Amino acid sequence: IESGLVDVIDTSYFFEGLLLFKPSHRARIFTILRHPVHQAEQLFHAQKKIVSFEEFLTSDNYHDNWLVRSLTNDKSGEVTEDHLSIAKGILARKFIVGISEYLEESLKRLKTYFGWQEKDDGCLEYFLDEYHTVEKENEQSAFKRGGDYWKLVTQTNHYDMELYFYALELFTKQGSTMFKRPYVDKDGVPIDFIQVKKERLERERLQREEAIKRYRNELIAKLNGTSTNHAGGGE
Picture 1: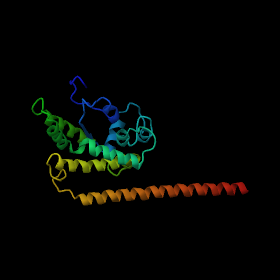
Picture 2: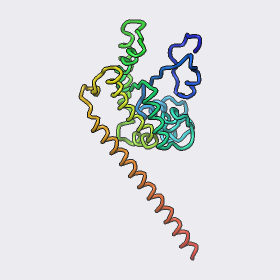
Picture 3: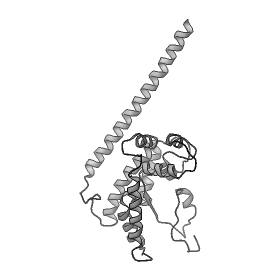
Picture 4: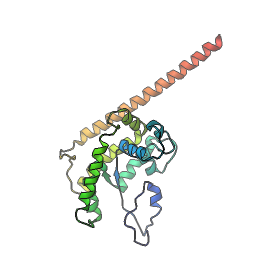
């Protein structure tokens, strides 16, 4: 770092990456986030062992809610709402946020912010063309929105999903405040932030209700088990 020969460091370990820098050599941080389902699918296909997707999600090779964990430096144990709150604060204060679904726009912002120039004319367009080709091939995967695999990943990575939705809001807001881009989506339609907030609150409400329902069912099951044991003991 101190040699000045390094321009960009790519790492999935946020806190470990920070340790490479000093007050005299400070970093400017950016990220390009993938949807947690697409990220899980990519990791699954990259593994060498032949196991089912369900087995992969519960194996030592997969860490649930990795984005929240890496930002809060908590690689093991249970992830909570406190972790999510901290991760949101770090993402909002420290990062230029890019989104892989809007890769072209994300790269334009990074070029503007860092003053990057293409080494060869057309290399960016070539990269984006290759990227979109791969993405179209991925559309034929078994990880369909709303399907069993999709639901399994979103349930396993509940907090990463919430952070991803928050990152989408940051992406839009930074576009206006930092890059003078309008509050529009990828199709140029103005974004209704009141509606976005309502949808987020509704998702959180449904998730709380589901959590309460699971807890109630588990409690009833335990009570029924206790009653059955007592009845069996009486005989």
